Image (cartoon, rainbow, N blue to C red; front, side, top):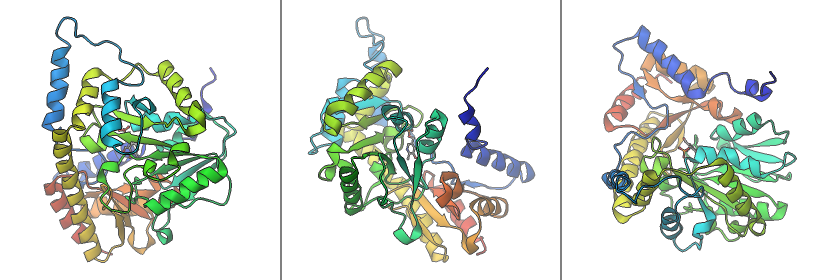
Length: 391
Ligand code: PLP
Protein backbone atom coordinates (compact mmCIF):
# COMPACT_ATOMS: atom_id res chain seq x y z
CA UNK A 1 0.00 0.00 0.00
CA UNK A 2 1.33 3.45 -0.90
CA UNK A 3 0.71 5.61 2.14
CA UNK A 4 0.98 9.37 2.56
CA UNK A 5 4.75 9.85 2.94
CA UNK A 6 4.35 13.38 4.30
CA UNK A 7 2.99 12.27 7.68
CA UNK A 8 6.46 10.94 8.44
CA UNK A 9 7.83 14.48 8.14
CA UNK A 10 5.62 15.68 10.99
CA UNK A 11 6.82 16.14 14.55
CA UNK A 12 7.21 12.77 16.24
CA UNK A 13 4.36 13.41 18.67
CA UNK A 14 1.78 16.13 19.05
CA UNK A 15 3.31 18.79 21.29
CA UNK A 16 0.73 18.51 24.04
CA UNK A 17 0.80 14.72 24.24
CA UNK A 18 4.54 14.98 24.70
CA UNK A 19 4.06 17.48 27.53
CA UNK A 20 1.42 15.24 29.12
CA UNK A 21 3.72 12.23 29.03
CA UNK A 22 6.46 14.28 30.74
CA UNK A 23 3.93 15.40 33.35
CA UNK A 24 2.86 11.77 33.96
CA UNK A 25 6.48 10.72 34.48
CA UNK A 26 7.02 13.57 36.90
CA UNK A 27 3.82 12.68 38.85
CA UNK A 28 4.89 9.05 39.07
CA UNK A 29 8.19 10.15 40.65
CA UNK A 30 6.56 12.75 42.95
CA UNK A 31 3.01 11.57 43.66
CA UNK A 32 2.39 14.28 46.30
CA UNK A 33 3.76 17.24 44.35
CA UNK A 34 1.41 20.17 43.80
CA UNK A 35 1.74 20.91 40.12
CA UNK A 36 0.54 24.17 38.52
CA UNK A 37 -0.43 23.50 34.94
CA UNK A 38 -0.11 26.58 32.73
CA UNK A 39 0.59 24.46 29.67
CA UNK A 40 -2.31 23.75 27.35
CA UNK A 41 -4.37 26.73 26.18
CA UNK A 42 -7.83 25.39 26.93
CA UNK A 43 -10.70 27.20 28.65
CA UNK A 44 -11.65 26.05 32.15
CA UNK A 45 -14.43 28.34 33.41
CA UNK A 46 -17.96 26.89 33.27
CA UNK A 47 -20.09 27.57 30.23
CA UNK A 48 -21.96 30.90 30.44
CA UNK A 49 -25.59 30.28 31.57
CA UNK A 50 -27.14 32.16 28.63
CA UNK A 51 -25.29 29.93 26.17
CA UNK A 52 -26.13 26.73 28.06
CA UNK A 53 -29.83 27.69 28.23
CA UNK A 54 -29.96 28.39 24.55
CA UNK A 55 -28.40 25.03 23.66
CA UNK A 56 -30.83 23.23 25.99
CA UNK A 57 -33.81 25.09 24.49
CA UNK A 58 -32.65 24.18 20.99
CA UNK A 59 -32.50 20.49 21.92
CA UNK A 60 -35.97 20.70 23.50
CA UNK A 61 -37.26 22.37 20.36
CA UNK A 62 -36.05 19.38 18.37
CA UNK A 63 -38.24 17.05 20.47
CA UNK A 64 -41.37 18.76 19.14
CA UNK A 65 -43.02 17.29 16.07
CA UNK A 66 -42.34 19.45 13.03
CA UNK A 67 -39.44 21.23 14.69
CA UNK A 68 -36.83 18.54 14.29
CA UNK A 69 -33.64 19.74 12.60
CA UNK A 70 -31.68 17.41 10.39
CA UNK A 71 -28.69 18.37 8.25
CA UNK A 72 -28.21 22.10 8.38
CA UNK A 73 -26.84 24.29 5.61
CA UNK A 74 -23.13 23.62 5.03
CA UNK A 75 -22.40 27.35 5.26
CA UNK A 76 -24.24 27.62 8.60
CA UNK A 77 -27.73 28.76 9.61
CA UNK A 78 -28.70 32.22 8.47
CA UNK A 79 -29.68 33.28 12.02
CA UNK A 80 -26.08 32.85 13.17
CA UNK A 81 -24.50 34.36 10.06
CA UNK A 82 -26.76 37.39 10.44
CA UNK A 83 -25.99 37.72 14.16
CA UNK A 84 -22.24 37.68 13.36
CA UNK A 85 -22.61 40.22 10.54
CA UNK A 86 -24.66 42.57 12.73
CA UNK A 87 -22.94 42.10 16.06
CA UNK A 88 -19.30 41.09 15.44
CA UNK A 89 -18.85 43.16 12.26
CA UNK A 90 -21.07 46.09 13.22
CA UNK A 91 -20.21 49.08 11.02
CA UNK A 92 -17.86 47.07 8.79
CA UNK A 93 -20.42 46.09 6.11
CA UNK A 94 -19.71 42.38 6.10
CA UNK A 95 -22.70 40.55 4.58
CA UNK A 96 -24.07 37.33 6.04
CA UNK A 97 -23.27 35.48 2.79
CA UNK A 98 -19.60 36.33 3.24
CA UNK A 99 -19.59 34.37 6.54
CA UNK A 100 -19.15 30.60 6.74
CA UNK A 101 -19.80 28.70 9.97
CA UNK A 102 -17.56 25.77 10.81
CA UNK A 103 -16.63 23.46 13.65
CA UNK A 104 -13.39 25.29 14.39
CA UNK A 105 -10.74 27.78 13.37
CA UNK A 106 -8.35 24.85 13.23
CA UNK A 107 -10.22 23.14 10.40
CA UNK A 108 -10.79 26.46 8.60
CA UNK A 109 -7.18 27.60 8.70
CA UNK A 110 -5.83 24.17 7.81
CA UNK A 111 -8.28 23.70 4.91
CA UNK A 112 -7.78 27.09 3.24
CA UNK A 113 -4.75 25.89 1.20
CA UNK A 114 -7.26 23.81 -0.80
CA UNK A 115 -8.23 27.05 -2.54
CA UNK A 116 -4.76 27.69 -3.94
CA UNK A 117 -2.49 26.09 -6.46
CA UNK A 118 0.54 24.03 -5.53
CA UNK A 119 2.75 26.64 -7.12
CA UNK A 120 1.79 29.40 -4.69
CA UNK A 121 4.52 30.85 -2.52
CA UNK A 122 3.39 30.69 1.08
CA UNK A 123 4.55 32.81 4.01
CA UNK A 124 3.92 31.79 7.62
CA UNK A 125 4.83 33.82 10.67
CA UNK A 126 7.08 32.05 13.18
CA UNK A 127 6.51 31.22 15.99
CA UNK A 128 2.80 30.63 15.62
CA UNK A 129 0.01 28.06 15.85
CA UNK A 130 1.79 25.02 14.37
CA UNK A 131 -1.19 23.59 12.50
CA UNK A 132 -0.75 25.98 9.53
CA UNK A 133 2.65 24.61 8.58
CA UNK A 134 1.78 21.02 9.51
CA UNK A 135 -1.29 21.04 7.28
CA UNK A 136 0.73 22.27 4.30
CA UNK A 137 3.32 19.55 4.89
CA UNK A 138 0.57 16.97 5.27
CA UNK A 139 -1.11 17.98 2.01
CA UNK A 140 2.13 17.23 0.16
CA UNK A 141 2.00 20.65 -1.50
CA UNK A 142 5.30 21.45 -3.13
CA UNK A 143 4.80 25.13 -2.35
CA UNK A 144 7.79 27.10 -1.19
CA UNK A 145 7.20 28.13 2.43
CA UNK A 146 8.93 31.22 3.81
CA UNK A 147 9.01 31.70 7.57
CA UNK A 148 8.46 35.28 8.68
CA UNK A 149 10.16 35.73 12.04
CA UNK A 150 8.50 37.38 15.03
CA UNK A 151 11.53 38.44 17.04
CA UNK A 152 12.13 40.34 20.24
CA UNK A 153 13.91 43.17 18.38
CA UNK A 154 10.69 43.75 16.40
CA UNK A 155 8.47 43.38 19.48
CA UNK A 156 7.42 39.99 18.06
CA UNK A 157 5.53 41.67 15.22
CA UNK A 158 5.97 40.14 11.75
CA UNK A 159 6.90 42.54 8.94
CA UNK A 160 6.22 42.03 5.23
CA UNK A 161 9.28 40.60 3.49
CA UNK A 162 10.96 42.04 0.38
CA UNK A 163 10.23 38.87 -1.59
CA UNK A 164 6.95 38.03 -3.29
CA UNK A 165 4.48 35.75 -1.51
CA UNK A 166 1.08 34.65 -2.78
CA UNK A 167 -0.45 33.61 0.54
CA UNK A 168 0.49 34.78 4.01
CA UNK A 169 -0.63 33.21 7.28
CA UNK A 170 -0.95 35.78 10.05
CA UNK A 171 -2.13 35.18 13.58
CA UNK A 172 -3.03 38.19 15.69
CA UNK A 173 -3.21 38.16 18.67
CA UNK A 174 -0.57 35.56 18.09
CA UNK A 175 -0.41 32.21 19.81
CA UNK A 176 2.13 31.72 21.45
CA UNK A 177 3.71 35.19 21.80
CA UNK A 178 0.51 36.84 23.00
CA UNK A 179 1.35 39.87 20.84
CA UNK A 180 -1.30 41.54 18.68
CA UNK A 181 -0.62 43.59 15.56
CA UNK A 182 -1.46 47.27 15.72
CA UNK A 183 -3.50 49.13 13.10
CA UNK A 184 -0.21 50.35 11.59
CA UNK A 185 1.29 46.83 11.43
CA UNK A 186 -1.83 45.43 9.77
CA UNK A 187 -1.94 48.34 7.32
CA UNK A 188 1.58 47.42 6.16
CA UNK A 189 0.41 43.88 5.44
CA UNK A 190 -2.68 45.07 3.58
CA UNK A 191 -0.50 47.36 1.46
CA UNK A 192 1.91 44.48 0.83
CA UNK A 193 -0.96 42.24 -0.26
CA UNK A 194 -2.23 44.87 -2.72
CA UNK A 195 1.27 45.44 -4.09
CA UNK A 196 2.08 41.73 -4.47
CA UNK A 197 -1.45 40.56 -5.35
CA UNK A 198 -1.24 38.31 -2.29
CA UNK A 199 -3.98 36.96 -0.03
CA UNK A 200 -3.73 37.30 3.75
CA UNK A 201 -5.16 34.52 5.93
CA UNK A 202 -5.63 36.08 9.35
CA UNK A 203 -6.33 33.85 12.34
CA UNK A 204 -8.11 36.10 14.81
CA UNK A 205 -9.12 33.37 17.31
CA UNK A 206 -8.19 35.59 20.28
CA UNK A 207 -9.97 38.76 19.14
CA UNK A 208 -12.07 38.83 22.34
CA UNK A 209 -8.91 39.37 24.41
CA UNK A 210 -7.84 42.57 22.66
CA UNK A 211 -7.61 45.50 25.06
CA UNK A 212 -5.04 47.82 23.42
CA UNK A 213 -6.75 50.78 21.73
CA UNK A 214 -4.38 50.72 18.73
CA UNK A 215 -5.17 47.06 17.93
CA UNK A 216 -8.16 46.63 15.61
CA UNK A 217 -10.70 43.93 16.44
CA UNK A 218 -10.87 42.98 12.79
CA UNK A 219 -8.56 43.39 9.82
CA UNK A 220 -11.54 44.84 7.93
CA UNK A 221 -11.11 48.03 9.95
CA UNK A 222 -8.13 48.65 7.65
CA UNK A 223 -8.96 50.31 4.31
CA UNK A 224 -8.53 47.93 1.40
CA UNK A 225 -8.48 44.77 3.56
CA UNK A 226 -11.71 43.44 2.09
CA UNK A 227 -10.00 42.94 -1.27
CA UNK A 228 -7.10 40.91 0.14
CA UNK A 229 -7.89 39.34 3.52
CA UNK A 230 -9.73 36.29 4.83
CA UNK A 231 -10.41 36.42 8.57
CA UNK A 232 -10.99 33.45 10.84
CA UNK A 233 -12.62 33.75 14.25
CA UNK A 234 -13.78 31.20 16.78
CA UNK A 235 -16.16 30.88 19.70
CA UNK A 236 -13.64 28.50 21.32
CA UNK A 237 -11.70 30.98 23.43
CA UNK A 238 -14.14 33.90 23.33
CA UNK A 239 -17.12 31.96 24.67
CA UNK A 240 -15.80 28.64 26.01
CA UNK A 241 -16.65 26.53 22.92
CA UNK A 242 -13.46 24.44 22.72
CA UNK A 243 -15.55 21.35 23.49
CA UNK A 244 -18.75 22.51 21.76
CA UNK A 245 -17.04 23.49 18.46
CA UNK A 246 -18.12 26.54 16.50
CA UNK A 247 -16.13 29.11 14.50
CA UNK A 248 -16.43 31.07 11.28
CA UNK A 249 -14.52 32.33 8.30
CA UNK A 250 -15.13 35.65 6.55
CA UNK A 251 -14.40 35.63 2.82
CA UNK A 252 -15.40 38.99 1.39
CA UNK A 253 -16.89 39.07 -2.11
CA UNK A 254 -14.36 41.76 -3.00
CA UNK A 255 -11.48 39.25 -3.01
CA UNK A 256 -10.75 38.28 -6.62
CA UNK A 257 -14.25 39.38 -7.68
CA UNK A 258 -16.18 36.75 -5.68
CA UNK A 259 -13.95 33.89 -6.79
CA UNK A 260 -12.58 32.78 -3.41
CA UNK A 261 -15.91 33.14 -1.66
CA UNK A 262 -17.66 31.04 -4.30
CA UNK A 263 -14.93 28.41 -4.30
CA UNK A 264 -15.15 28.08 -0.52
CA UNK A 265 -18.93 27.77 -0.70
CA UNK A 266 -18.51 24.90 -3.15
CA UNK A 267 -15.77 23.31 -1.04
CA UNK A 268 -17.96 23.48 2.07
CA UNK A 269 -20.90 21.91 0.28
CA UNK A 270 -18.64 18.97 -0.59
CA UNK A 271 -16.81 18.56 2.70
CA UNK A 272 -19.15 19.78 5.42
CA UNK A 273 -22.61 18.82 6.58
CA UNK A 274 -22.73 21.78 8.90
CA UNK A 275 -22.40 22.42 12.62
CA UNK A 276 -25.24 21.12 14.79
CA UNK A 277 -28.31 23.31 15.28
CA UNK A 278 -28.12 23.50 19.12
CA UNK A 279 -24.47 24.57 18.99
CA UNK A 280 -25.23 27.28 16.45
CA UNK A 281 -28.06 28.50 18.71
CA UNK A 282 -25.54 28.53 21.55
CA UNK A 283 -23.14 30.62 19.45
CA UNK A 284 -25.99 32.99 18.58
CA UNK A 285 -26.68 33.36 22.32
CA UNK A 286 -23.00 34.19 22.90
CA UNK A 287 -23.57 37.24 20.70
CA UNK A 288 -26.67 38.42 22.61
CA UNK A 289 -26.32 41.24 25.15
CA UNK A 290 -26.48 38.75 28.07
CA UNK A 291 -24.07 36.36 26.34
CA UNK A 292 -21.55 39.13 25.70
CA UNK A 293 -21.84 40.32 29.32
CA UNK A 294 -21.25 36.82 30.72
CA UNK A 295 -18.41 35.85 28.39
CA UNK A 296 -16.73 39.23 28.82
CA UNK A 297 -16.52 38.55 32.56
CA UNK A 298 -14.68 35.32 31.77
CA UNK A 299 -12.24 37.11 29.47
CA UNK A 300 -11.57 39.71 32.17
CA UNK A 301 -10.93 36.88 34.62
CA UNK A 302 -8.41 35.18 32.31
CA UNK A 303 -6.70 38.48 31.51
CA UNK A 304 -6.40 39.15 35.22
CA UNK A 305 -4.54 35.85 35.69
CA UNK A 306 -2.27 36.85 32.79
CA UNK A 307 -1.58 40.19 34.45
CA UNK A 308 -0.67 38.56 37.78
CA UNK A 309 1.73 36.15 36.08
CA UNK A 310 3.31 38.82 33.95
CA UNK A 311 3.75 41.24 36.86
CA UNK A 312 5.41 38.61 39.02
CA UNK A 313 7.81 37.51 36.29
CA UNK A 314 8.83 41.10 35.61
CA UNK A 315 9.16 41.84 39.33
CA UNK A 316 11.53 38.90 39.67
CA UNK A 317 13.62 40.26 36.81
CA UNK A 318 12.60 37.77 34.10
CA UNK A 319 11.84 38.94 30.56
CA UNK A 320 8.32 38.24 29.41
CA UNK A 321 5.89 39.58 26.84
CA UNK A 322 2.22 39.35 25.84
CA UNK A 323 -0.66 38.84 28.25
CA UNK A 324 -2.31 42.18 27.45
CA UNK A 325 -4.27 41.34 24.32
CA UNK A 326 -4.18 37.61 24.80
CA UNK A 327 -4.22 34.91 27.48
CA UNK A 328 -0.60 33.95 26.75
CA UNK A 329 2.65 35.06 28.34
CA UNK A 330 5.82 34.62 26.28
CA UNK A 331 8.61 34.00 28.77
CA UNK A 332 12.24 34.28 27.70
CA UNK A 333 14.31 31.55 29.27
CA UNK A 334 17.00 32.90 31.56
CA UNK A 335 20.66 32.34 30.62
CA UNK A 336 19.68 31.45 27.06
CA UNK A 337 18.52 27.96 28.01
CA UNK A 338 16.74 25.93 25.34
CA UNK A 339 12.93 25.81 25.51
CA UNK A 340 12.73 22.09 26.35
CA UNK A 341 15.62 22.34 28.79
CA UNK A 342 13.92 25.15 30.73
CA UNK A 343 10.53 23.43 30.49
CA UNK A 344 12.01 20.27 32.02
CA UNK A 345 13.87 22.19 34.71
CA UNK A 346 10.84 24.11 35.98
CA UNK A 347 8.69 21.00 35.76
CA UNK A 348 11.06 18.89 37.85
CA UNK A 349 12.35 21.48 40.30
CA UNK A 350 9.43 23.89 40.60
CA UNK A 351 6.47 21.73 39.54
CA UNK A 352 5.31 24.25 36.96
CA UNK A 353 4.04 23.16 33.54
CA UNK A 354 4.65 25.49 30.61
CA UNK A 355 4.80 24.91 26.85
CA UNK A 356 8.21 24.96 25.15
CA UNK A 357 8.34 27.80 22.62
CA UNK A 358 10.22 25.70 20.07
CA UNK A 359 7.00 23.68 19.63
CA UNK A 360 5.60 26.73 17.81
CA UNK A 361 8.43 27.19 15.33
CA UNK A 362 12.17 27.63 15.09
CA UNK A 363 12.01 31.25 16.22
CA UNK A 364 10.23 30.13 19.39
CA UNK A 365 13.43 28.55 20.66
CA UNK A 366 14.60 30.13 23.92
CA UNK A 367 11.07 30.82 25.19
CA UNK A 368 8.26 29.03 26.98
CA UNK A 369 4.57 29.93 26.87
CA UNK A 370 2.41 30.26 29.97
CA UNK A 371 -1.34 30.03 29.54
CA UNK A 372 -3.63 32.18 31.68
CA UNK A 373 -6.61 29.91 31.05
CA UNK A 374 -6.43 28.99 34.69
CA UNK A 375 -8.07 29.56 38.06
CA UNK A 376 -7.05 32.03 40.73
CA UNK A 377 -5.89 29.09 42.91
CA UNK A 378 -3.67 27.70 40.17
CA UNK A 379 -2.27 31.16 39.48
CA UNK A 380 -1.40 31.58 43.16
CA UNK A 381 0.30 28.19 43.19
CA UNK A 382 2.18 29.07 40.00
CA UNK A 383 3.26 32.42 41.44
CA UNK A 384 4.73 30.70 44.49
CA UNK A 385 6.54 28.24 42.22
CA UNK A 386 7.86 30.99 39.95
CA UNK A 387 9.34 32.72 43.01
CA UNK A 388 11.37 29.60 43.72
CA UNK A 389 12.97 29.51 40.25
CA UNK A 390 16.62 30.42 40.25
CA UNK A 391 17.75 32.67 37.44
N1 PLP B 1 -6.07 29.24 16.01
C1 PLP B 1 -5.28 29.52 17.04
C2 PLP B 1 -4.30 30.62 16.92
C3 PLP B 1 -5.37 28.79 18.23
O1 PLP B 1 -4.55 29.07 19.25
C4 PLP B 1 -6.31 27.74 18.32
C5 PLP B 1 -6.42 26.92 19.52
O2 PLP B 1 -5.66 26.95 20.44
C6 PLP B 1 -7.11 27.50 17.21
C7 PLP B 1 -6.97 28.26 16.08
C8 PLP B 1 -8.11 26.40 17.22
O3 PLP B 1 -9.38 26.97 17.37
P1 PLP B 1 -10.69 26.10 17.29
O4 PLP B 1 -10.95 25.55 18.64
O5 PLP B 1 -11.74 27.08 16.83
O6 PLP B 1 -10.46 25.03 16.28
